[in-house]
Image 1 (cartoon, rainbow, N blue to C red):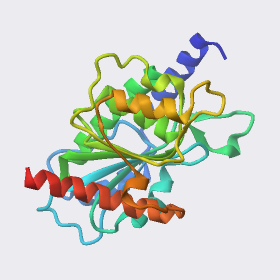
Image 2 (image 1 turned 30 degrees about the horizontal axis):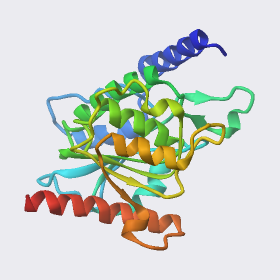
Image 3 (image 1 turned 120 degrees about the vertical axis):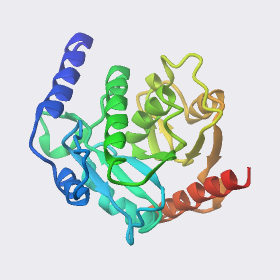
Length: 258
C-alpha cells in the first residue's frame, strides 16, 4: 500500500466511524447517566469504552486516564486495565484503533503510523472529552495518556501534538516508530510528565536504539521518570499499573504544594 492509498484508507476508516449512527455500549451507559440533562451527548466515535469509578462523587473532579491498547487489542481492554490501576481514583476512556489486517482479521486492531491520523484522532479525543464532561466531572488539568505496545507510539504523537490538553503520559513496554518525533519542531513538553518503562524500545525494524529513544524524549523537555526510579524490580504487569496510580497521585500532590 503506497502513501496515497494509505491516506485514503485512513480517511475512509475515520469517516466510517463518524457516520455510523448506531449507539455504542459506552454511549448507552452515558445516556443512562444523562437523566434530564438539557445537553444531549453526541460522541464523535462509536467504538469507545468508558470506566466510571466505584462510588462516583459528582462533586469531585476526577483525573481521566485515556488508555491506548497495543496491537491486537481493543477498547474493551480498558475494563481489565482500570481495576488494576484503581477502582476509585480515575475515570477511564479508551478508543478502538481503526486498522485491521484483511488477511488476518482475528489478529485484532492496530494503530496506523501516521501523523495525519493522529491529528484527526486528537480532534475526536477532544470532542469526546468535551461531550463526556456534560455528564461526568472530569478534571481538565489531569488528563493522562496511558499505553502499552504500539499504543505508546500513538500516545507519543498525540502528546507532542497537544501538550496543553494532556498532563502527561505513562508508556509501558512500548514500541515506538521513527516517525513519532517528526513534525514536532518547536514542541515543548516542559509542563508535561512522562513515565517510561525501561523495556520500551524502538520498533524492531528501526535503525535507532533504545538509547536513541531516551535521547529523543529528553529533547522534548518533559519531566521524565522511569519505572526503575519508582521501584527497582518490577516484573509483573499489575505492578506497573499500581505504579501508574502512584505516579499520577504524586503529580497531584506536588501540584497542591506549588
